[in-house]
Structure formats: C-alpha cells, structure tokens
Length: 381
Ligand SMILES: [Zn+2]
Ligand SMILES: [Zn+2]
Figure (tube, rainbow, N blue to C red):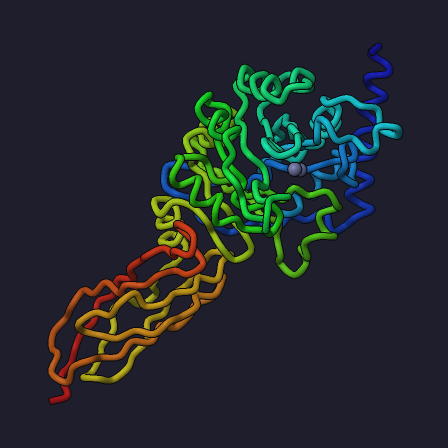
C-alpha cells in the first residue's frame, strides 16, 4: 500500500471510530467492574470467544472492541469460525482481517486484542478455540488433527468450547478424541460457561484433569441484544490473574490455570483464588461488639465489590448463633448474632463459619469462609 492510501485508511478508521462514539453515546462511557484482585496479580476481565461478520457474527470487528471497552473488559479475542462462513459471498474470506481491522481501535482504547479462531468440526471433537495465533490459515486443514497440531506448534492456548452442545440431553461427553488431545498436550482448558450456560460436568473435568476454567460469551449479536447492560447485567467473563497486563503474562496465567469465571452473580474457580477475592471485597466496619447473655447484636459488613455475597452459616460456634445474610454489592449489611449462654463472660476472638453460596469451588459446592469478630460477653445471670 502506498503512503498516501495508508494515511487515507488511518483517517477513515479514526473517523469511523470517533463517529461511532458520538453516534452511540452509550458506548462513550465505561462501566468499571469492581472485583478485587488476588495479591500478587492483576485481575483482567477477558472474553476469549466472540464472533464478527467475518464468520456468523452480526457486528463489525471494531464494534466488538467498543462493546468490550464499554462493558469494562480488558481483553478480548475475536474467534471467528474457520470452517463456518455463511457470509462468505458478501464478506471476503480472510482469517486475519478481523484482528487487523480491530487492532487500531483496541490500541486506542487500551483493550488487549488476541488473535484467535474457532476450529469448528462435528462432534467429536466439536468446537475448539485456539488463541494467541500467529498464522490462522495453517488451521484450515481437512483433518482436525492437523488443525490442532498447527495451533499447538504456534504455542497457542487451546480450549474446548461448549462441550455439552449437540450432546444427548445437552450433557457433555468425554470422547476418546479429547483423551488423545489431552495426552498430546493439545487441550489446555474447557468452557465451563458459554453464554449464560454453566456446565457442571465440564467444571468437574477441569478439577480432575487440571485444565483451565473458561467462561466466555460466544457472542454473535450486538452485545446489548443479549445482555441488559443498563440494568447491570453483564456477559460471562474469564477473570485472568496475570503478573501484569502484557499478552505474555495473560498467556502464562491461562496455562497456569489462574482463572476465575464471572457468571451473573457467581464466581467459579479454585478456593485459593475465590477466598482472597471475597476477603478483599469485604470490610467489617466495627468488629468489636458486646453481647449480653442470650441477647442479639449486629455486625456491620461493607461489601466493596459488584457481587451480592450470599452467606449461610456453616455450623455454629459455642458462643453465638448466626443467621444467613446477603452482603449486597456496594452496601453495608447487618449480620445478626445471638448469645447462647446467660453466663458467658469476657472478650473472645471468634471466627464465624459461613459458606458463600454464589462462589463455586466445585459443582454445588460453595466457598467456606470465616468472619472474624471480637465479642465482649456480659453475663445476665
Ligand atoms: Zn462453537
Ligand atoms: Zn463460537
């Protein structure tokens, strides 16, 4: 391309970009998602599975970036299908174009854009996303094994998409093909969440087979058609705990399984990550209280995150009984405590045991936590 036409292209891209911002004022503001990080890492909000008009999506690549910025994401992968191209008579097939078109807008908005593709075969093996690709064309092969090997040879991170899709009763099946991929090092993670669908079987596989948990939108429509952003609904995301926000760090974190899935009002992941996220979300405002005999008192707990934490007692202590409580996002909530003895006396540090029901460390298993308080007991007899 000559210098003049290159400059013209930049002007066209920038004009398109800023016109879109002024035309759609909603996209001129960004929601900031409040989920505290795990010490030692930055928490990056990622959607690693999206589509554009270059496969069967219904939006232009730059719009995907603007949507991502608006919704509070940090990282996005445009992962158009390699084999399924229903608009190919209208949109010229070029596997690298979505990334090339979206890159200037991503750079302008500080969104990290990852080159990706969805290997789209019948089951098994089904659909797999390969991300951090350099040469997408090399994945367009008749034999899926060659496609997977081409991705692997480029150092791609490869994950199995929506494993329950088109399976009997939508229940995921682990085929011999997946076993072979795993043995060859061609399978690094699984979508435990695709759209707003949670897959407990895939969750259990990730735990047992030491695979990375992913939660992605697989968005085809404009994002606002599927998620009511104005009502603080959000697409599912993979929260990546990276040493820094570079692409190399994101890749290293994914291979090291440092992810948490953000689905509606739930977080899904290992306890070692969910526990510090919970602990760093809450602040006990007045941790020292007095309880007279069997009377009641309250503890004020402030929740600085975007999640409503649903706490249920996980057994009782010898000194006090507690009730279930919801710690609402961005609010201070009251936790009710009741003394169990008329004769208790003196100051005690007590760890109140709870299960956070919307933080899932395994299928149907909430995160155990403790709320630390100091109680001065005053006897009534
Ligand atoms: Zn798919
Ligand atoms: Zn897809």
